[in-house]
Length: 376
Image (cartoon, rainbow, N blue to C red; front, side, top):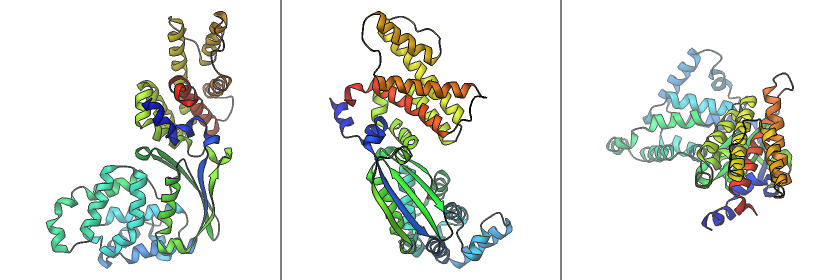
């Protein structure tokens, strides 16, 4: 009963089981380029002059492939330029360079990065940095214990995530987001889809809390979307968040969690073939386990499609009714079709769509088998 209550109040499980019915919180935004240019320039102007000169010399010495051009004309070419700029600054800056004025200006950025990194050690380091920045130099020297680990944590924070990374998994709050952008001559169009409203709201807060960005920010749409064109965008990130949660650990066997995590990891790396094969192997293993539990004999070592057919036929021979609901059969077939395409390398050009179908098929069958008492 306790697990059932947890599911009933668990949007992430509901989303993974029936994404279109659940929907996602969707925002479509417009960001103009001058606003982003002014934001980057505002960061640079708040860095102490000595530190600025050192960073500029370092960038120039590394050649035109680096970010010296950005500092020269303050033109942001892409949203990733902003993250690259901040990474480079953090690599070069010492703790004493984080003045109260700079920390106040960067506060929305740091808060957003803490949120999407979803790591207590990073959160603690950022809070310590803000504390050191708010006291006098003499007091800061007495607070040196707070400084231990801050530089490494800041480097890790920007290595792990970017400000506008497309897939954001949030295990601690069991949420997931997808951020996408289109570049135009004068603006960037940014689309955000999150399972819970908190994710998209936090992204909007980050943008709105930076005065320069807020001046160039326009909210075009903010609504709950059920369109298949949008609703599956955060699905892989949602799988990552869910598999790191308590319900997954309680209800799914360890092997299945490992396969789900690996299939999602390869999906995120755009290794479609490997992701599909991992999803199919996991589903094969799950069907073999179902067969052995039902018929008390070892399952044959046969491919996924043949194993499904054997289970269906065995149920018919014993007059036990259908082995699977029609929806589950369809998802087994979709995963099997993706597997066949993946193992026959010359058949079709694989894409993220086939990999997502295979991953969704594994999730659907696993939920039906292990959580069917809760799904209704």
